[in-house]
Length: 394
Image 1: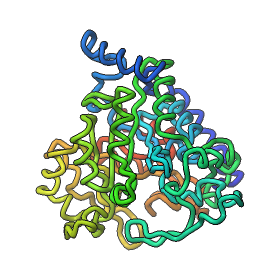
Image 2: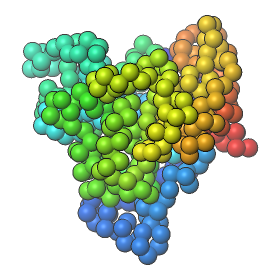
Image 3: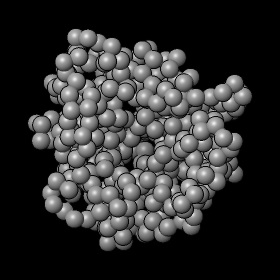
């Protein structure tokens, strides 16, 4: 994150204040996958699932603070360092995005294009694998996870995705490898055993239609891991999510854990709809009849914040839509995305000063969104979100 000298104390103040909330972090068991799954199932029968099962998503604090790609405002995203910091800060849920390797392992990257999030460009042995592909209708040039085995991918190191905005995060470039989702599950079990509470995860299937056509279907691989680590039940501490509704419909056939349909701009169309020739857009999905259909296979939606409160031509917030009310009427929770502290990412009403990378009035923006009745929110800055949620709850 690009912070000038005057902005650094502000960051430290937020981090320090959030430390008192870190005991609110949620965690879940350790040990081998089989032993932990057996223990949790036993507890479910004898103690109501106290160890990891039996804790419904409805019991999470409201508003729920979801660490977007971990504490990505402070560490390179989707690294164990980012996840650990988010957990230590007290984030209620921690997000992972999943893409596959050539040999079928699920790894945590926001995109299958790893050009901007790893040091791949510094590896001459992989120079010939740079290519251009069409990903969900968009031409992308770079290096892609599906062209590498896991062993090859593990020779790379993660780095900050937006160094111009988050220069301080570049301090941690090269410190961590790209984690597999199985490594994250083991980490969550270990950390949860230490804390005595389940570590909640929010897991996204990325570009599922694209990968299915490559013979690298995400859903079956994800379900297999969830079953192996005892996170496949209705009361398991994990949300599943996707921008493609059909992916969540398919996951509903494989596991019982709660599912969330992600929603981009109103005029956009989910890629699985485009591939299937379905003319519906997100605008159709957020109508009462569309939400009713989503509620038949999912427990929530994850809309972009602009679907909650639109912005005017100057970037300022306007009047909230009826989406929160309409979704709640169908029994759906709302986990919108994404709040960040920097001016460039905030609504214009909450920007402070002229430096786009300096922190604005993030607390004011959080309150505006919390006032709409949302159930949770994704944020790159979990400490700020936790303090804002505590203020909101009074």
